[in-house]
Length: 180
Image 1 (cartoon, helix red, strand yellow):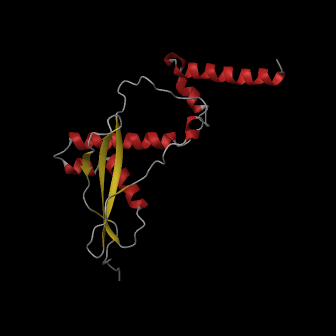
Image 2 (cartoon, one colour):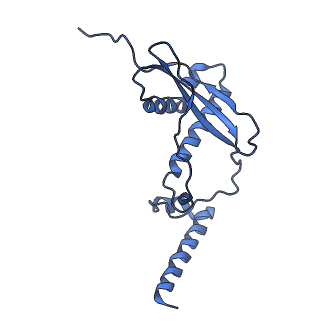
């Protein structure tokens, strides 16, 4: 064996050992994650307690200054996965954050159906509203509304389900008040 082959063997062996250590629960693996700023140690959760079976979608529509409403459009928060993501996936934390926020909003919406102020005041609702508002680039938009929907990722024939339809939110006031 050549010296380069030993170096490659050492690298991949170390990577395998670190991966196994990270997945062994008694090793304090959270400390490894802190020392891994590039995300080289994989985090595989094949057997999570409750696997996710749904895809979540955020749709938005604008209400224009002429009184018309635009068609619903899906907000692409996370770009589609690429083949390179299997090896190097810096966007995985964004994907996980989006999933956490949408699941939290779905839980808040279903457990507090009769308490609109609890839903509208939740961090998940305000986070999605902020994102949708910031993503809006239509100058003629006065109000914005978003919807949270879910679709089954396993059975494609199953219908999508509306989990939450937001209130109308004012984006821009047509008649701003003047301070004189």
